[in-house]
Length: 168
Image 1 (cartoon, rainbow, N blue to C red):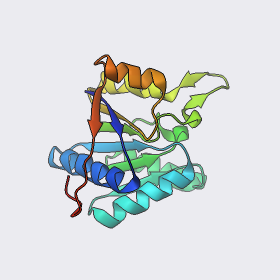
Image 2: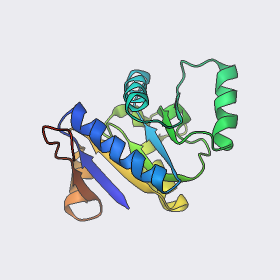
Image 3: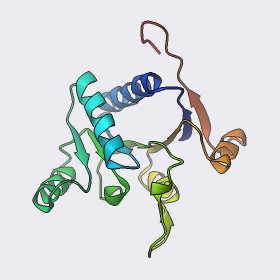
């Protein structure tokens, strides 16, 4: 239930995300996509909104406090099928998660060097175990230790092959 997805380009990435989200929608579970920064969050949010007809939110620190409170209530009430967020909001109590996707897993933005010190990759790995959901580490150039885990069989290695007609 732990995966490393190696993308070659943004087109493959989008096809892969769509496939995972559609699978989760069929199973009536939500998808949490954690992105390393605000810009990446808006990029992923826009692409998903354009290709899927589902409830999607993008939670990040550019949103004012009143809206953050509204998002928090909506998350608790399970009003979103796809949640895209930055590390600042990754630890909210998201409900009915079928899959956690750590986009650009190698980003330094997932490591907090201030107190409390933590690596969000490890924290979300533990969370996925506790809530019995899949975790997918997305990367174009994975960290050596992550790739080693995949080669040792501790992570299942995933690839997407996109044909000229965008089918997987």
